[in-house]
Length: 436
Image 1 (cartoon, rainbow, N blue to C red):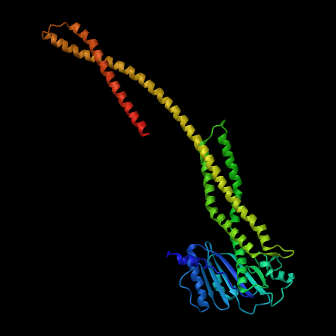
Image 2: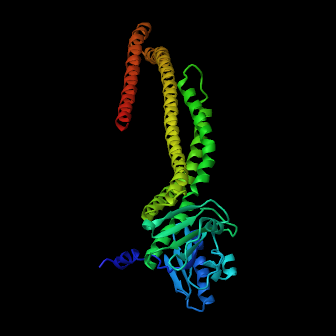
Image 3: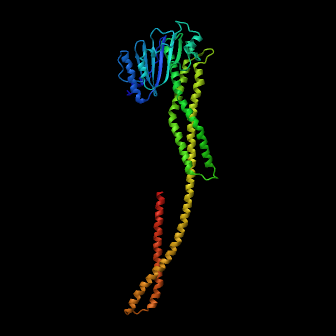
């Protein structure tokens, strides 16, 4: 058996759908929290067990559900956030639909000390339409403080859903559900989809402020890059290569910093948007006359925001590629300039070597004359010494005959040495070319 076989089986059952009776009151909180604080958040959650006189779990999990009688609480850990779903099944519920909520049953000090940053918070009020008639539109609107309603009939009219997708005076959003003919399991699945639509669409929108922030500078960066490209393409003017390289490096650093700050957020925005669209499709809404459905509202408002994030991300990627191409052009220009300088340097070195060679030949001629002069002088001393000791020779004739012989011998020896040095230089050059 694979060591992770049991965990793989359990993964598909880690986040089961809720089973919700009607009527009920639900509160949902999505809290952005970093990894280092998740253990502290788990310990804070365990404090609720002591409040309701129950034994807390020994370790954290991706989904923990606590049943405290009339109150059920589910804590789920996600990649970026921790969510709390509080289901209040107690009676009686007040005339004001949203006066009694899920969090009404939790200690206020516990809510105040909740760590992280709340990004999504809303109440869901579920009423049983078979026990009491649905109110008219004016009364429903009063539950939402007179705000403009968004309504639909999910699951082919098995329920009526009203919401505004706005924050109300209590700091929470509101969703009102009238259950007409759904079982507790069906109602739980539908409410779960509504919760995910509302929470995921808010988290998806976290990328929009980033997109707006960087869009303010992207047009300027495009203009600067176009100006640099024009400078590179204009061969009539001299170019300060160091200044251009400095500008390119600054632009590349800004773009890479922007990509580092936005890549994850924009990818998360696209992923959460896909989840929202899937949950909307699963609702199978019917239209309520005169009102936008949830799907129509989301596609009209959320989709353009997601496209803005996607366009900004693509703009940054495109700008990065263009900067790379300009950098390559600049490197090519610098290399060509260096090659031109090297050619001038080699030509100058070639002229110097020719001058040195001519001077060397001149020096060699003078050296032959000088060495021969001193050699003949030494030979003259030998001839005079031999003549004074009685050798039968003509001093003048002997000295005269030695001059051409000495000059020829010195010249021959000099040429031999010269050829030897030239051979050594050629061998060294051949070795260098083989290594290259």
